[in-house]
Each structure stands twice: as C-alpha cells, then as structure tokens.
Image (cartoon, rainbow, N blue to C red; front, top):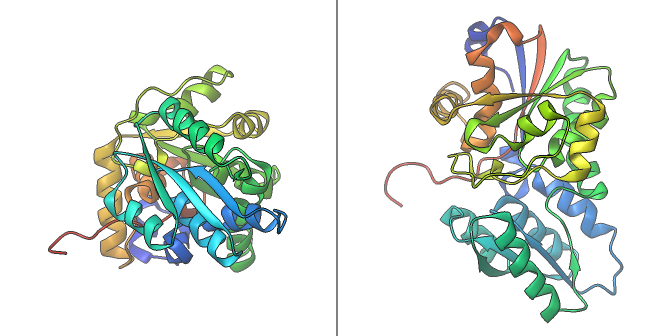
Length: 283
C-alpha cells in the first residue's frame, strides 16, 4: 500500500506492508504458525506468554493444527486482545505486568501441564523465520528497496527482517522512548534489562530477546526512539491517509520518519505490524 501524501511528507517513496490485514490482525501469525507446524502430532497442548497478538496467533495456529493453547496474559493487556485470545479457544491465565511475573506464572502453567510445549513469542529460531516472511513478501511485491523499517519489542520481526535483508538493505528499527531496552542494548553492545514499560504501544513493551539481540548486534542495526505523542499522531495519520486501522505499535516507524525525514531513503518499506485496537466511539 502506498500514499502520495505520506510520500510527500518525508520526500521519499514509502511502501507499507499491511500486517493488520493478516489473520488474527498482526504479523505474529507467521511465526506462531511456522513454530506450531514443526511440532510433533503427539503434542496436544501449546503454551506461551503474550500481551495479546502472539497469544491470539498461537491460539489460531493451535486450532488449525488440532491442538489446545494456554496463554499467560498480563493484567494490563488491551481488553480486545484478551478477548481475541479467548474467542480463538485458548485458555487465558492472568499474570503481572513485567517479564518476571510472566515467566513465574508460565513456569507454574508448564508444571501443571508436563506434556505441553512452550512456543516463545519472539526469541526462537522458528518464530524469527516465520516473522521474516513479511519482509520477504514485501520485497517480492515491490522490488528493490533501500530501507526496511520495523517496529521492535521482543525483536522477532526485526531479527527476521534483518536476516531477509542479508546486509543488502538497510534495516532501521523504531522503538517507544518509554520501552527503550533494545535501543540501549545495541548502543551499549550489551543486553540491558527492561524497565517496567508504560508506553501506549503495548505490543512493544516486551524485553528484547537474547537471540534477537545477537542477530541485530552482529548486523549493526540502528534503533530510533519515538515518544508516545508522536506515535499517536502517526497512528491517526495512517488511519486518515491510508484509511486503515492500525494499533499504536504499528505506527512507530512512520512516527520516526516524520520526526527525521532526512533519515528516510529514496525507496523505503514499512511493516505495519498489526491492527488490534478498538476504534473510538460506542461498542
């Protein structure tokens, strides 16, 4: 998808990969489906932790593959994302807002289901490979690009995109200022612990994964920080100019571009990561 007005705003040619149109509303289905398809048919239950999008994706993948799913979800997750997981047939287990709480509750769930298999939300080779297909498809659709812009939270999409780019295309990640562990980790060349995140971009609150950090570090990937106000402005712009619904996490790259248009190359791809948000107004 393209927009003449957005091209003019950054003086470049932008190509949007609309993962908000994906089944379950985000790119996360790519990794979840790839990982689930690799499991033995003897595996009957899959378990994960998620703020929403990966949980819904795994619930869908499990249903397609004839398995059951259990998802550990933080209490501050968006209600529409929690509801999507439940509607897809997964059992939701509540946890606290930080990664330590998620992992503690996950351990309890795994102990109660010894035959279940954990499918990580981002820090896993098969998840990374699946997420990378979004960039692969974009390149097949629009041809050569000078840049690929990707939102970053746990880093699965960023790592997969980096592998697809293979050093031939510049990859730039955008991250909320209020959840900046990926930026700080790559700047310091050392994986930094995530502080409790409070950004409006709830899909990017997750700490950067170790495997993803190594892939990004080795490829010298840059991370641009964006404040929440800029994210919401960019989200509104996408809604108004492209006439599509995206969630705040999907708008971070356009926000970064608008803050510094000089950084945008002549032909740039942007992955709009998802659209799982309730529109304003009565429900």
